[in-house]
Structure formats: structure tokens, C-alpha cells
Image 1 (tube, rainbow, N blue to C red):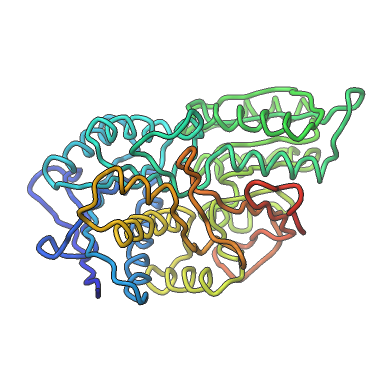
Image 2 (cartoon, rainbow, N blue to C red; image 1 turned 90 degrees about the vertical axis):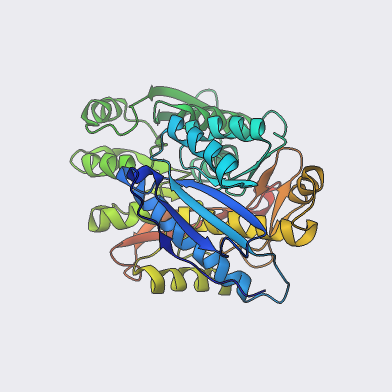
Length: 414
């Protein structure tokens, strides 16, 4: 089936929050409607704009496949990363647009509420860009499936990396760690998941300080003073997006990066951060992300990055690949189960889903864990090194260590 792409921003007489982007099949042709929630404006607006391009690339990819996929219509609304607004939009999608799938959501606290409403409305929620492990840690939610790696996966890989790079430590000389994360669910879960990962890896560590700046904090100087005073072996940072950019810019005015190692194992390597900082990004920071423009060096990833640039004139943040993955997941389930399949059949197919994604290295295909509805993916952790290929970024990641799911220790490689 050949998808016709409609890029329509409907400017209505009602307030701007009612505007929707429509992609994919026309209303008349569509067999399934998907409602996506992304911030399209404000501090997180890049995630939404990148996600829309990612959805467009998903449709292009589906057009190129030999299998027949049912026609899908995707509607995108600006959630503004606000829970109350997102909840209203989910109900509007279900009751007025007759959607069967919700996708997206950047903020983990918002995702928790959207998941609850999706359960109430009995529509599937495909998480593409939030990482709190709370949604997948206590057994599967019947209508929730996540296609980007969560904080537990990232922190399990982080613990292995720390053990390999910093040593196991011992009771007499434990690794000293400081943690700074945003004061909401995502930050709390990263900290919990990191400690669980370190304990499981049998790393001897000592917590020197834990800091909780509020989301969108403009001034990190009080936190930087505390971190400078502690002089720890490793600062683990869980800020993301513009908050992480502001933190690094302000940290550059201190000696923090000269006297301690700095790591952000989940979002720090996002291209958005690398591009925003440009020449201000220090070398030697330990970072990772949910998608990398320069790894893996596969045909799929090269196509995704180059095609994204051709369409948008910029390189993709990880949000783009998350949205791309979400639409591919829905399309593949509909191809296998059929558009008219019941919820139980859809759930069974989602639970055994396999997707070949741009972030998958050679020989690996992302697969869904039926126990918690969390897609299993490879985590790549690197260090910032000079790289001029992806301007305006002047630093990209290199010196990779690669952590497949399940058997991290046995499969980590330089």
C-alpha cells in the first residue's frame, strides 16, 4: 500500500492548542487513527518538531517495504508537556477522532497520567520519548508499551560502565559519587535505578551528595558550588534538554570538569545538547542517548540521519527516532494482527514484537519484553571527542562501550 503524506497544520478559529498536524493516510482512506502528544512549542518544542519529521520518515520507510501495511492516519497535538492538557487531549482524541492508539509524551510525569487515562479509555499507549521505569517495573500495564529504552536499562548499562572504567572499589576505598537530577519522577527513578544497578554489579560506592534542582532551573550556581566542594570521583547528572545545556554552560565557568569525571547516561548524548553547546561542549564527558547520529554505522542509521537532514535541514535529536519507532511498531502490529483485531490479539502481537531500528547495531534487532512491555535495546555509552561532521555540534561521542540487553558484562566492547 502506498501511503500518501499529508502535512497539514490546521489553523483554526479556536485557540492554538486546538491545532493539529495530520500525517499519513487521509481521513477517508485511514483504517486506523493514531493520536500523538508532543510539545510543539516552548522549551521542549524541538522534541515535537523532530518527532513530526520522524513520523514522516516512518511513513517513507513503510512505503519502501514489500509487505502491505494498512493505511494509518496520525494526528499530532501540542501537549506543552502539561499533564492536565495531555489528559484532555487523550480524551478528545478518543471521543472525537476515534483513535485506537496514543503515542509520544516527553515528560515522564505526564506519561504516568496519560497511561492511566489510556487504560480507562481502553486505547493503546505507545511510549516513544519518556524514560521513567515506573511504567514498566511492576508488571505490564495492559494498554502500555514503550519503544525507547527506559531509565532502568540505561542505569544498568551505566553501572557496568562505571565498574569497568572506575573499578569495583572496596569497603576501604569506595567510589565517591554525587548525583544531580530533576526534582520530579524521572530524576527520582534514575537515581533509584542507578543505585540498584551499582548494587547488582557489586560496585562499592559512597554517596557524597544528592541534589534536586527544579525542572527548568535557570541558575545552577548553588548546586555547582556544592559539587565543587565535594571533589568526588564521579558526578552523575540526570538533567536533560535545555536544563543540561544550561548546567554545562554554567559548569564551564567553574573548575568542576577539571577535578572530577562527569556522566549523563540517559540523555546527555542527545544531539540537541551537542548542537546547542557547540564549541562549549567539553571533551571527555561520559554521555549516552537513546539514539546517536554517528553510531551505529549501519545502512539503516545512515539513511535515517541523512534523510532527516534532507527534510529538515538539521540533524535529529533522539525524539525523532522514538517517534519513528512508535509508528513502525503500530504499523507492524496492524500488519500482523489486522486492523479489526481485538485488544487481546493486539496485545499479544505487541508483546512479541521485533523491530529493526536505526539505533540497532549489526546483528541485533530490538524486541519487546512481554513481562513488562518494554522494548529491549542496545545501550551505547561514549565520551565527547572533537567531530566536525554534524555541525553545529563540534563534539560527538566516541570511545564507545556497547551494552546489549540481558548479558551486559559478557558483551561490552570498546
